Image (cartoon, rainbow, N blue to C red; front, side, top):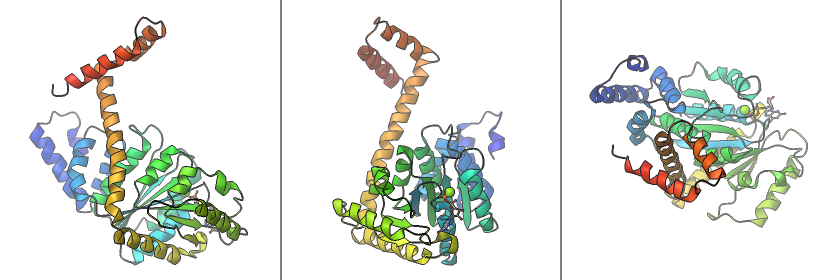
Length: 334
Ligand SMILES: Nc1nc2c(ncn2[C@@H]2O[C@H](COP(=O)(O)OP(=O)(O)O)[C@@H](O)[C@H]2O)c(=O)[nH]1
Ligand SMILES: [Mg+2]
């Protein structure tokens, strides 16, 4: 499929047929077509937009669970355990592992691959480690698009693992229907120093490694923090203790997930949450598209030249930007 495109000039119709066939293969569960679709979308290859257009109408069925927390907290182990749990319940899964702390070697990604090899023989689980460097248009957006592909492929459940360190990760977990923040004993006062943004997005707190001393203390700290603020949806995030490496507490966690899901449905919050997410995503897509258009219009080196002119006060940046925006807008239908 992809190879047919290379070095050939396609008519619009055959390109459409090609994407259509590809989309149908993805939906039929063809693992190779799925892998290629994910790579295409992740790399923003030329066919990416057409493919996403074809897949989008078939997405929106999967539940997306986000897991975030500090490195080494046991996120991958927990994902693995949850995957087992949901497989036993007959669900199909897509797993997206995003870990910017170890993009190349060792660390989490390699660890993830090895640990998850277990599942490799099971076509009901599809695992993807996202490249975190050089992803065009932002990591959050790539992750969201990859999730759309998995969703359209008919997976019931998508688990996204990310290290809770920065804005990128907050943006990523925002696209989840349900977000879990994984903490561990021994963090001491660190609970307070964790990015406020990360704490706020927790629908469920997990204290993993509860076999270690200090789980109670972390729990108290979370409770203390919770008492300071109420959420706009009035949900009080439960705290679940787990020992992921032994599979302990995983059933409790799954029950907490089901609880929150029930709450979302009862309060009619699913759509509201989705609208909020899409509002952000649409603005971001628009920003990308406009910038891309301006860049194309400007050409190589032009920005540097303008910068030099502005720096030397030969031009004012306000008029300049207005001009660029006007020109970029005028060739929309060229
Ligand atoms: N003692 C203990 N170790 C755990 C537990 N869960 C995970 N681990 C171990 O912690 C290490 C990091 O786990 P990993 O899942 O890779 O963490 P991640 O970086 O958050 O994905 C691994 O060696 C796990 O075996 C737990 O509940 N208790
Ligand atoms: Mg991991």
